[in-house]
Image (cartoon, rainbow, N blue to C red; front, side):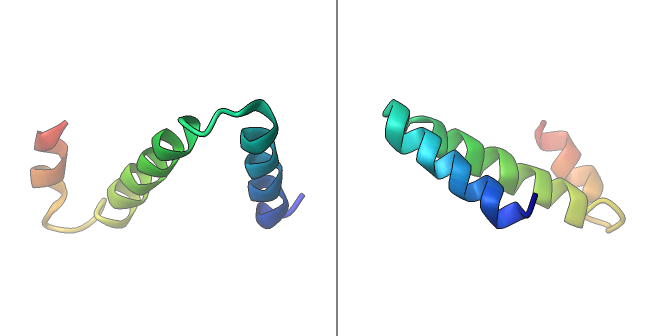
Length: 52
């Protein structure tokens, strides 16, 4: 299953079930996970982990 197909199915779920409030939550979770993964080995890691 491709990643685009999963995103399409998620968007269709949001439209059909009228659960638009889930979209910002998922976007924030994805952005936070990308931030943690991308700064894992850098000098910024202790500062980012201190926020949580």
